[in-house]
Image 1 (spheres, rainbow, N blue to C red):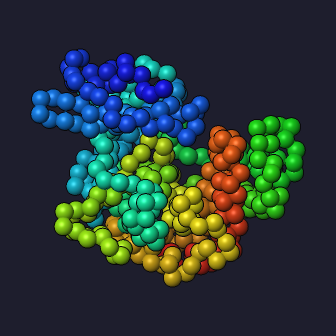
Image 2 (image 1 turned 120 degrees about the vertical axis):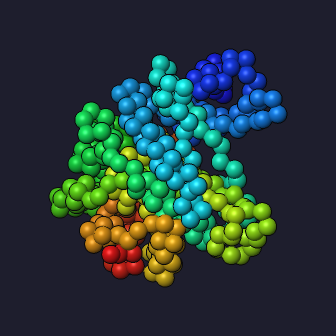
Image 3 (image 1 turned 90 degrees about the vertical axis):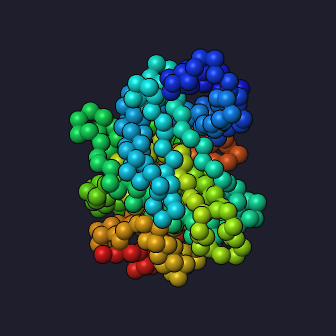
Length: 381
């Protein structure tokens, strides 16, 4: 397949390149769910002796979500402009604006945009290639999250009218939607939500346990309480594959978990986030990367290790949590786990859905058992 060459040419022209500029596709990136998100590509653009590497990104959204995407990406451009050199060796890779000041092509079914290509290798590949250990990757993820939250903290909220209503995550609405799914899984009644029957092979105890937790969060007004927390432009997918590590000249990584002089972490794939509580961004940190980590067990959350990760979050530029954030942290993480499980159940290939949902729903129970540990070690005011 690959990205339509006409789309790429139109993007380049919109960003000021001549119609006859020389360019080539270096890599095509196939989406995990082709029916849900189209493919993406990395291209090289040649202008004399200069070569620019650009990421051709498809946000996979159609109207009216375009307004939400424009607000999100514009906020990322603003954040990058305020911290062009990054924070504590963490950089934000923001999209590029067109000649007209917009971010995306607006007259195509999906919304395409360009961004620079981050130099280096993402943490997921480094772990898979055994160049760094998973604990090392978690340290780097923690530092990057602190830097990212610092960078976006100076960016204001979305517009109050219209687009703001789309960008601001309303947990009351999404919670009710999730409730229908988890009620069906727990009871086995799929009459009102037939697609949920795709993963009926899941352990019944996991399904019932998740429904019990979600029902508690709804009836005890925990969703409304999380909605009332301070908001920021969260990444919403802050995991290993979206953090690129670039090793500085002369630095030696070895067994060290610290960044050396010249090393850099780049945060990529920033189009999916919303204006919500930063607690949701801690999910992959607490759950050890989920897919990249070991299969969860009852001892998955280690007090000392979690305390170390939170300290690296602060060292990277993050700030202390408020007392309200500390109290609601386990609940926000549980909501995040259930939301991702629902997504995978609906969109993942059948061969992947079972294992992914099993891992995620297992974490719902682990977080419940470890909620006091999380609250005790979380960095607080």
